[in-house]
Amino acid sequence: MEGYLHLSNGMKYKGDFAIDGKVKEVKGEIVFFTGMTGYQEVLTDPSYKDQIIVFTYPLIGNYGINVEDFESKQPHVAGVIVYESNREAYHYQAEYSLQDYLNKWDIPMLTHVDTRSIVKNIRQSGSMPAVMTAEREITSNTFSLKEDGKVAKVSDMNFKTYGQGEYHIVLVDFGKKESMLTALLERDCKVTVVPYNTEFTRIKSMQPDGVLLSNGPGDPKELLGILPTIKALITHYPTLGICLGHQLAALALGAETTKLSFGHRGANHPVMDRKKKRVIMSSQNHSYVVKEDSLSATGCKARFYNLHDGSVEGLSHSIYPLQTVQFHPEANPGPSEGCYIFDEFIENVKANNGRVFAYA
Ligand SMILES: NC(=O)CC[C@H](N)C(=O)O
Image (tube, rainbow, N blue to C red):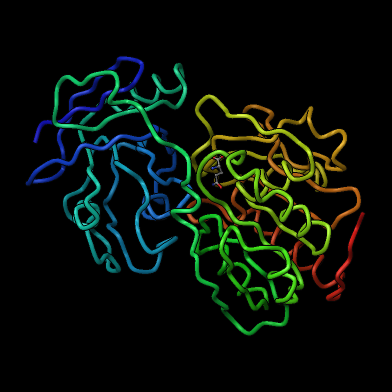
């Protein structure tokens, strides 16, 4: 069925909705992902909450959707744009085709649009509001987006403990990917997942050996209210911050964040680790970055850099056992070359030996 993608800069693309019935109109910030595979993990990564995602690889869906590679219980994107999508799934583990899976969750997919042209547009105008609809013409006020409150929508508000490992890690859930939990469970941890707004005293009463601040959707500055808790955690426990968790740790220590024009979303972003003097390929999904020139009074130093644009990709701290990364060391999708960050975190946890420190 004929359909349209409208961008707020005035561009319009005609395509086919991959659905037989009625088309649902959706709007969201439009972003693009450059990996050739990994669409299942992308769709179910809560950091993509309410975004419209363009997959740049021209054939998406050929291995279907399986039950093992979900990063959360449901897809979070508002809509999907691909050049061509397989109607059938060709993989022994496939439980659904991509189209059936998206239909099940009432998420529209527009196909046979010129995805290269869309991406060029996003690269020029930046990520922007977009509308997917059956309507050829829309009014400009259709583009107004409500972008706040996404973390509250995706954070699990229940407290749950997983595993029986030696090290007790509290994972603060801003919209976590399952792979982060798995990475800890594989490293002899018991993990308690707590809601994003859990108070410091409650976490302290759980006697953690370390804290993981997870990834999550939206602008980190929306969460200014919880920065005192983040600072208290960083100054009491070995802490690892990933993506949104990295941005929140930086803000809590007095640094600044800013929004990139069109962000980094893909599975082959080269990152320099200045400590190890090596380059790793990384999986990425973010719009915001920590500003390097805001680090001077924070005690943080940029350890990792993105080799495409020089932006900060991770921090270390001169006093606290704090590590943060903007990229995704848990991979899924993408390379796991950065997974040594989890090993370093566990080393910090071991070295601290259950001590509750309290730096001034
Ligand atoms: N994956 C993430 O945690 C993303 C962090 C933040 N929402 C950003 O876009 O920069």
